[in-house]
Image 1 (cartoon, each protein chain N blue to C red):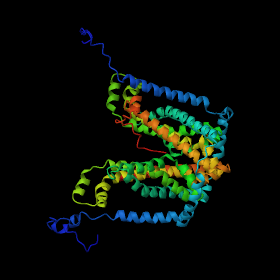
Image 2: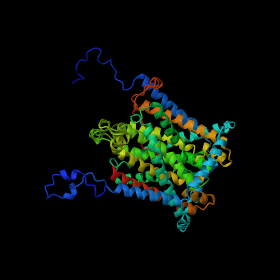
Image 3: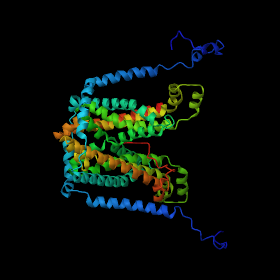
Image 4: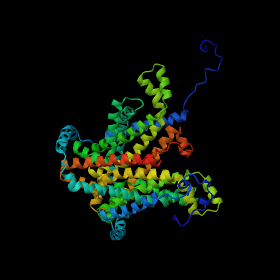
Length: 304
Length: 273
């Protein structure tokens, strides 16, 4: 807004002459900060693109390549399906075992990290473990485990276990910190032991959210178990990367289709498990698609 | 006391149960499947015992090779690669926001009351989410060649699904009152968007954007392993040459950046929301 166009509101203000005129002069004056931020953003985009040598010509050249690339992706080649099935099964095994181990380990660690139940000297080390486990991508953790335990599925299992500890541990801690302490106090007042306080005061309050995290983590582990193979940690990822490096693009396409369908099936199953445990659905309900009480949504926190 | 009072006939026969038999059967079946899956996985997974027995020795070897980290390597190559990673994450997030806004609007039923369009938009979002960012990176490396451009596009395409889904849900949860008022006053579509919906979804939008940026910083650090630029490429070359002291520097740099990004995002979220 320019100073030459005074707002009509300015005439009607009951300022009374003595009040701070500047404050009530124009209550609808836009703040200058969004514009400054927009200019800074554009400047950053130009600077960063120049730094990374991204230019329009490269995009155009790439788009010409894209047609050829997609032409070679299709039709997908399923002739080596035995290799494909073997890789997918190994990915599944990695996901199942990593989720099991991760959940079992995340339970005590997440509990120890809850500040409303544990003293600081217990919660801080536990929080440190969770933060460290979360800060590295599973593929990077997998690199270290490949060195430690050699190539193969075990490295993938351990890497995804670490990722699961980070994710479930964090969410479990948050869930416990949000519980109502009245019930805990009531159970404690009966003279219950610490284990009973946990079993009857704490766990019932967080159980449904816990099921949500676990199914979500199983889903996430399934996605990542198809990727850790890129660094040699077992599963279909190794086959995918090898096919890609040999420019065997039609096989790459077949593998991608298989991975995506596996992930989608996993997602459907996870939704079903959430409906069963959180909404009390039965198989009959699921088949009749009566999931109207679908509170079993995945936690909004999505971490790939 | 109730225990001493005579109980009328028929009262004690009713047994209260938390779950119906069908629910219990369903739950039991799920437990059974889970246990069966775990047992089957343990029995079939290929673990080479020699490698496992060797593990403690290898870990000690790893630590001695990593320590002390080769700090001199940081200013030479790691710093530039780290900055490139941050650029990939930021540019990728910006591009994703730009692309996800229209798709998110198309997916919101109260804005575009056409079920086929909603479903088509949701299909775009689902396919973006079900392809891992490493796979997107592989595809874009195949198209644009190795480098940061492929990484930026991979981050952007992976993020569209996330941002679009959450943004569409925020739009669908918007209060209809202000929008009806604007429509009654004869406001065009653009005004309804900017004055009716945008103020309502603004906090959600910025919180989604910041959250995705945080995830993208983490993800962009690995894209280099498949050749899509950033610190992952430095990591990959150090790994291939078994320069573990350099690997240690790179891992510490990633760790520091990820922690800083998380702190920044937490602080900004507190300001915005």
